[in-house]
Length: 148
Image (cartoon, rainbow, N blue to C red; front, side, top):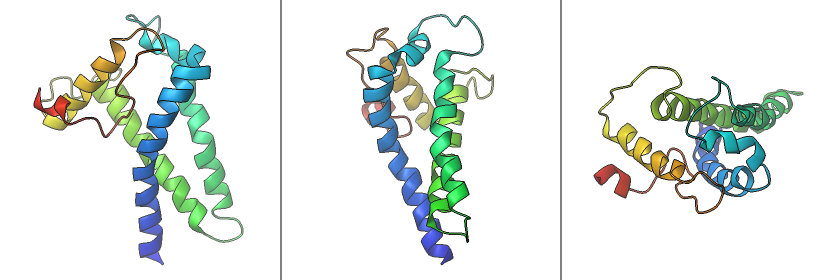
């Protein structure tokens, strides 16, 4: 049973990259651009952005899955929620700390993977509008950004 739950958690974590790509391209750069737009502006007006509301919005499915994953007994839904939570934590670490450096850790990293992620995200942010975007994923970006 533990192996099954571990695989469910891992599969959910991996699958979240696809969910992130689709959500970023079609929701954040689509009908909820109003919330995401300030994230693409060159200067932040404050530490917080409207875009930060997505962390709350995207936590709701995970919280619900945790709740229904222990009611009445521990079941698969809990581990799907766990995979979503772990991906959200990785997303926060990569996006807020490594890429945007909103928390000043790893500011001079030379880790090739982190440098590649930062390059890909810079390409994404060169577009100030919601159209013509690229590199909508977070943890899996095209290999060309690791060779540059």
